Image (cartoon, rainbow, N blue to C red; front, side, top):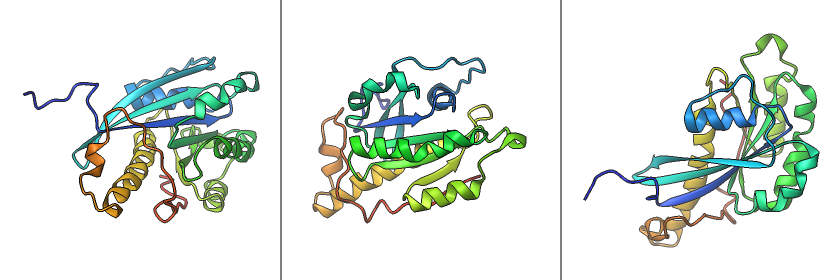
Length: 217
């Protein structure tokens, strides 16, 4: 039997969503993480698109299905289906646009209204390469992240700074919850016995999901 797994072989499928205002760089974060590509002339996403990436954690294969949608109000009708089953989220703002940061709390409320209360959320300040145009300080973002119990990271999809790190941190925290549940149930093999393709819904594990400002550089 081959030692290599195919794209369809994995132990867990975790659904992540990327949310935030239009133009903050959500699609480029997705393409940078999944394909290591960046499009300087990227147009606004219309509707929904998603991509996948497979990673190894503790000898388990995790497949991330990452959904990206437009931040524009006229596409908000897709909300329920978009969020359904999500166990992690990247909430993105543009460090050069203060209003995109001010809208974070509205996005966060919408996310929490449509997902499990313990969804793993990473606040992402994108476009950190535009240092001379920064309108949102790292300190302001860290304060918000701590107040709302979010992880936090500043990224540059253009320069590929912290992009992979942000996605992997969210996936790692989800996986820790799943692993902890397996240990608590007394079944060390519990994590491996779930059918491939099952989305893990994270519930009632607030002790694991204590989040504070993380990794701004």
